[in-house]
Image 1: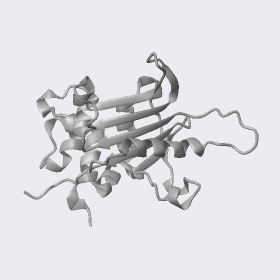
Image 2 (image 1 turned 180 degrees about the vertical axis):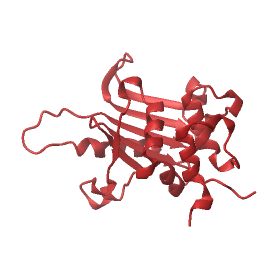
Image 3 (image 1 turned 30 degrees about the vertical axis):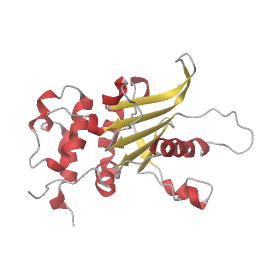
Image 4 (image 1 turned 180 degrees about the horizontal axis):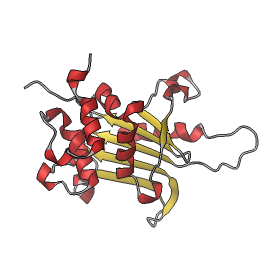
Length: 215
């Protein structure tokens, strides 16, 4: 059966749904669903990733989406389809870009705005062994000390391990459940599922994702 909607696990599909100016309400809604309550975004703007980096090699490391909230907090959103051995290292490396760009010339007090790196993964990390995290969809990481107390709260890594999301439509309960279900199954839908109807944010998302509207 021919797909009706775009595959969000492609570079083109992901940016079409979340990375265009017209897609900003959907991206804003998605980010606020996974961010903590004290980091909710009222508005955001897309930033040009090509202006980041001090060397040519740095500038080749482009993010899928780089945006900034109205309070100056930075957000990198990366989609990764194929498993990559050093994906954690890659996101940590990427997080240094929005940190370094905040440096001011002359005298500066080093007060930084928060940076969030969000990875949407079509694979799972394999280093949990028998720990509870092995089956969790959302992994949230901050810098902590040896007692588990947060040492620095302005750098956050959030990984969505999509293969661990196995809920069916009838089992969806939270806003996050619905958004993860949308991302994981979008390409499989032939009609808009009932659970998404009467929600403007999803109606617009399905409209943007319809393949028949593309050249």
